[in-house]
Each structure stands twice: as C-alpha cells, then as structure tokens.
Length: 138
Image (tube, rainbow, N blue to C red; front, side, top):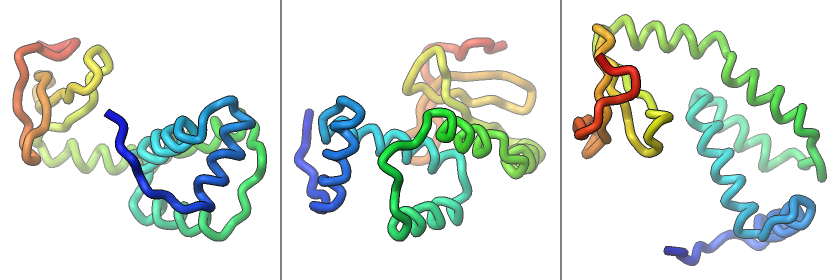
C-alpha cells in the first residue's frame, strides 16, 4: 500500500528531471535510486557508504551516465578483493553463513559448515527454518 513520504524539494526536482530522461515517473525514479542504494550498501563497507554519501552531496552529478560506466563501477564493487578476505574470515569462524535463495525471492538460506542448506527467514535476528529445503540442499 502506498505511503506518503516527505522529501526535499531539491531531491524531487532532481528525480523529475532524471525521470523525464528515463521515461519514468518521479516516484519510480526515487524507487529506482532506493533500490540501487540498497544494493550498493550491501556490497560496500560502511565507511565507503559514508564517503559516497558525502561525495553525492558535494559533487555535481552529470545529466547522463553511460550504461557501461555504471556497469564498470558496480563490477569493481563486486570484484573487490577485500570482500573475498572478509568472506574467508567469516567462514573460518566455523558458524553458518546466510545467503538469499534465488529460487525463492524473500527467502534466506542458512549454509552450515558441512554444506547443509536450509531455507527460512530471519525473525528477531535469529534464523527460523522454513518448510522448504533450499535449492541444492543435502
């Protein structure tokens, strides 16, 4: 259900301008930015999120950015060597890790050190197993 949200006049003007170029409504443009923001926030370190936010507040944004340039930036974020080191440290702790289940959007998969995969969801910062087994489960 839609809910009204207060945003600055500046952000709304920027959304309208970008939306017109992309053949979207201003609302769809803001939702698009929010989706990208959530994805980037999940991929980068918190200090980098803060740096991006500061840069966005002070740097002028181009009217158009080539799709290839956006892809190159996102690819660098995903391929960051620091992510692999962080994953290794997390796995070395010996506990389960959690991932999204691409076969069932909105479902979390718990992956135990022995490779056992269980679908479920998080409730109160705790994993709650669901009825379905995750794709590729043992």
